[in-house]
Amino acid sequence: MSDMKDLDPLHKWPEKRKRLKRKYPDLTDNDLSYEVGEEDRLFGRIGKRLGKNRKETRNIIRDI
Image (tube, rainbow, N blue to C red; front, side, top):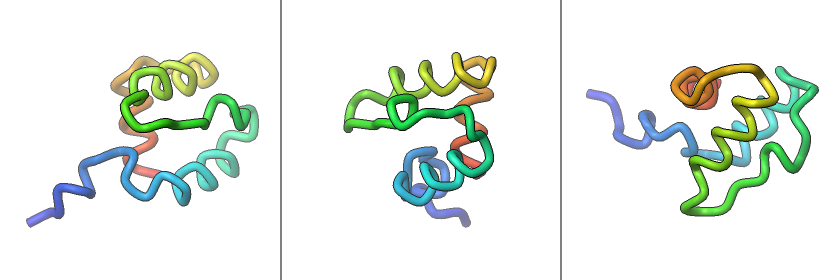
């Protein structure tokens, strides 16, 4: 059975942030800034930069 934290795309955010910057160099520090409770804004910024919808963006972050 999978740990519920594995389903949270923002679990281990500092590590994921680094991986996202390496994989998508066009992402800026501002695009990747995250504050608790601001998930929608984060997904929106990243999605806009990558040309992805919210679901695609969430999956990218979860899977990276």
